[in-house]
Amino acid sequence: MSDQRTVLIADDDRAIRTVLSQALQRAGYNVRATSSASTLWRWVEDGEGDLVVTDVVMPDENGLDLLPRMKRVRPDLRVVVMSAQSTFTTAVKAAQRGAFEYLPKPFDLKELLGVVERALAAPAKSAAAEEDAEGERLPLVGRSPAMQEIYRTVARLTTADLTVMVTGESGTGKELVARALHDYGRRRSGPFVAINMAAIPRELIESELFGHERGAFTGALTRGIGRFEQAAGGTLFLDEIGDMPPEAQTRLLRVLQEGEFTTVGGRSPIKANVRIVAATHRDLRASIRAGLFREDLFYRLNVVPIRLPPLRERTEDIPLLARHFLERARASGLPGKTLTAEAMERLKRHAWPGNARELENLMRRLAALYPQEVIGEEAVAAELTEAEAPADPAAPRGTETLEQAVERHLKAFMAAHKDGMPIRDLHDRVISEVERPLLRLALSATRGNQIKAAAMLGLNRNTLRKKLKDLELPVVRGLA
Image (cartoon, rainbow, N blue to C red):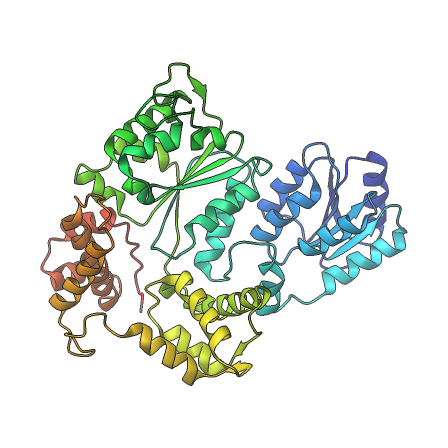
């Protein structure tokens, strides 16, 4: 062979490694062989190899468990799974997790060489076909550059217990990332426990997190187990961490520093055996400046930050997501539907303030309400037009001023917080919400030139630079 393709072999049986290596080398392939899954993972993560041939049972990790991570960082990498556990379940798992082929042991060397040849010669799947295949086994959908980077980050984090902070607008899939970190990580056999800070009365948050002893407060008739204990050995997902009250922030910081906690009313320390994944839609740096979030806690939680882009920043993923959500709707009992190309284009022009959650809800409506099997642009446009209609009838579409738009959004925000949760950082939040698109559009208009953008905005260049840093806005020269 002239291109000298490289095959990576992973099997804890030295004799099998030797036989496979010799046969593949005689056939003209380069070969690297290892007895451990960890070494194989390192090679794959570093971009080595054109094909993987791996055993299932290895000393440090099951090859089938490693397979989804390999496909995540290298979607086009072909993987051949071999196993002495010649069961239907093993074969099905191999196929579901993306294996090109499954070979039960013992196998004929000619058969394996034929499989290797076919795997290396097979054309790459289309984006739609590959996404459809992955949709059943992977929680995140999308092939945009932004999502590919998230996949790589999540895949790397599955081998470590580092604390992660996931940021992004509502509906972008922050809990899906947390679940992926758990399901493909070291703690996947343990529980995944989620708690939403914004949904719990502030006086009960500490009890919810750390538990309480009998008689610790009025109504505590029995000992209560908190989320830290419930998640022992697994992952604790702290959603909307920006809504955590200051006193609970202090206790959480102490737990992260000392690795142990006490229940409310208790005295005996309990070891905190959890991996923390936090998430928020808030700008925590603005909350820190406003004195509403502890800076030391932020840096404890923000060990590895992951920003989920809003759907409007990855419109190329919308067709994949739409098909994924229609298939999910069909699986739940709704009629099967498809969309025309024109309907897909109309979806891509929508602003998606509700992000992927809004798209999923729309797909379920279309599946439930429209009788035709193939849904066209007219039906999609009708649904989106209704969704885009302004909430305030006093402000007709097309005549609404910026002041009216801000007032309408603030009314909706305050109406959603009538449960008594204090709103103390509203000024900074509104300013940052307005500043972010303003700076982004100014940079777009000046093709990333900060000097011109500063002049357009009437700001000092250093002031603009600081604002871009505080708002974590990327600057790309020559952008359209």
